[in-house]
Length: 112
Image (tube, rainbow, N blue to C red):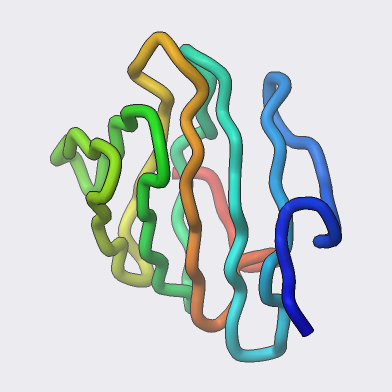
Protein backbone atom coordinates (compact mmCIF):
# COMPACT_ATOMS: atom_id res chain seq x y z
CA UNK A 1 0.00 0.00 0.00
CA UNK A 2 1.24 3.48 -0.86
CA UNK A 3 1.39 5.86 2.10
CA UNK A 4 1.55 9.65 2.28
CA UNK A 5 0.53 12.48 4.60
CA UNK A 6 -2.89 12.40 2.95
CA UNK A 7 -3.72 8.86 4.11
CA UNK A 8 -1.40 8.29 7.10
CA UNK A 9 -2.44 8.37 10.76
CA UNK A 10 -2.07 12.00 11.92
CA UNK A 11 -1.46 13.47 15.38
CA UNK A 12 -0.61 16.88 16.82
CA UNK A 13 2.04 17.55 19.43
CA UNK A 14 3.81 20.43 21.14
CA UNK A 15 3.05 23.96 19.98
CA UNK A 16 1.10 23.44 16.71
CA UNK A 17 3.34 20.64 15.39
CA UNK A 18 2.06 17.74 13.26
CA UNK A 19 3.13 14.14 12.81
CA UNK A 20 2.10 11.47 10.29
CA UNK A 21 2.87 7.78 10.86
CA UNK A 22 4.23 6.61 7.49
CA UNK A 23 5.35 3.26 8.95
CA UNK A 24 4.31 1.88 12.32
CA UNK A 25 5.38 -1.67 13.12
CA UNK A 26 6.78 -3.32 16.28
CA UNK A 27 10.30 -2.89 14.89
CA UNK A 28 10.18 0.36 12.90
CA UNK A 29 8.62 3.82 13.08
CA UNK A 30 8.81 6.37 10.26
CA UNK A 31 7.13 9.68 11.03
CA UNK A 32 6.93 12.77 8.86
CA UNK A 33 6.79 15.86 11.06
CA UNK A 34 6.00 19.53 10.52
CA UNK A 35 7.31 22.10 13.00
CA UNK A 36 6.44 25.78 12.57
CA UNK A 37 9.19 28.41 12.99
CA UNK A 38 10.55 28.46 16.55
CA UNK A 39 8.81 25.21 17.57
CA UNK A 40 10.61 22.19 18.97
CA UNK A 41 10.42 19.29 21.32
CA UNK A 42 11.58 19.13 24.91
CA UNK A 43 15.02 17.62 25.55
CA UNK A 44 14.67 13.90 26.18
CA UNK A 45 16.23 10.47 25.65
CA UNK A 46 15.13 6.99 24.62
CA UNK A 47 16.40 3.94 26.46
CA UNK A 48 16.01 1.55 23.53
CA UNK A 49 15.20 3.45 20.35
CA UNK A 50 17.86 4.83 18.07
CA UNK A 51 16.69 7.55 15.70
CA UNK A 52 17.58 9.25 12.46
CA UNK A 53 16.33 12.77 11.67
CA UNK A 54 16.25 13.76 7.98
CA UNK A 55 15.25 17.25 6.78
CA UNK A 56 12.88 17.34 3.80
CA UNK A 57 12.59 21.15 3.82
CA UNK A 58 13.44 23.98 6.16
CA UNK A 59 16.24 24.17 8.70
CA UNK A 60 16.68 22.36 12.02
CA UNK A 61 18.89 22.54 15.06
CA UNK A 62 19.41 19.07 16.46
CA UNK A 63 21.21 18.96 19.79
CA UNK A 64 22.62 15.53 20.66
CA UNK A 65 24.43 14.96 23.97
CA UNK A 66 25.46 18.62 24.20
CA UNK A 67 26.58 19.03 20.57
CA UNK A 68 24.40 21.13 18.26
CA UNK A 69 24.02 20.19 14.59
CA UNK A 70 22.53 22.46 11.92
CA UNK A 71 20.58 20.40 9.40
CA UNK A 72 19.33 21.74 6.07
CA UNK A 73 17.26 20.19 3.30
CA UNK A 74 18.73 16.85 2.28
CA UNK A 75 20.77 16.42 5.47
CA UNK A 76 20.26 14.11 8.42
CA UNK A 77 21.83 12.95 11.66
CA UNK A 78 21.61 9.86 13.86
CA UNK A 79 20.82 9.82 17.57
CA UNK A 80 22.01 6.73 19.44
CA UNK A 81 19.82 5.15 22.09
CA UNK A 82 20.37 6.72 25.50
CA UNK A 83 21.61 10.07 24.11
CA UNK A 84 19.81 13.20 25.30
CA UNK A 85 18.55 15.19 22.31
CA UNK A 86 16.21 17.90 21.09
CA UNK A 87 15.16 19.12 17.64
CA UNK A 88 13.97 22.68 16.92
CA UNK A 89 12.95 24.63 13.86
CA UNK A 90 15.63 27.31 13.62
CA UNK A 91 14.41 28.79 10.34
CA UNK A 92 11.69 31.21 9.32
CA UNK A 93 9.63 28.64 7.37
CA UNK A 94 8.00 25.34 8.39
CA UNK A 95 10.43 22.48 9.03
CA UNK A 96 9.41 19.18 7.40
CA UNK A 97 11.46 16.17 8.46
CA UNK A 98 11.43 12.40 8.79
CA UNK A 99 12.01 10.80 12.18
CA UNK A 100 12.99 7.15 11.79
CA UNK A 101 13.13 5.07 14.97
CA UNK A 102 14.03 1.45 15.63
CA UNK A 103 12.47 0.11 17.68
CA UNK A 104 9.62 2.68 17.76
CA UNK A 105 10.24 5.45 20.29
CA UNK A 106 6.68 5.97 21.57
CA UNK A 107 6.53 4.83 25.20
CA UNK A 108 10.35 4.89 25.39
CA UNK A 109 10.84 8.56 26.23
CA UNK A 110 12.12 10.14 29.44
CA UNK A 111 12.99 13.80 30.14
CA UNK A 112 16.69 14.68 30.01
